[in-house]
Image (cartoon, rainbow, N blue to C red; front, side, top):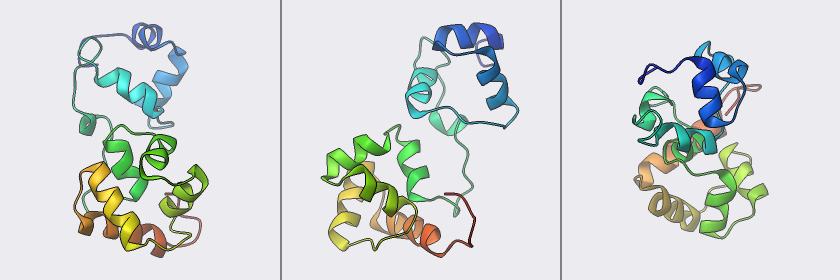
Length: 132
């Protein structure tokens, strides 16, 4: 860990179990966005989100872009005036991405329209059974 925390210490600070921290470090689980927010806090690890969430360039989905901005799906949906159900369907590429919604996503997440469209298109065209 960046600050020399043991798994147990970090778990205690975050209000989680040591097993959860161990699973993240082993790549068997991922922390919730609320936990990521705590982790990047200067009083905990004081690191950039990209050190915790690594998605290769050109492989991001909409949900990855949202996560890199430390915003939950429900927060983003509320900010752009969509239901969480619709936001989830967009992130999975199950419904069409309108130009208006793409522009709102780009503005809210501070990415280019091209980044938003590309992330959506990757979700839309992913092979069956591929998680987003």
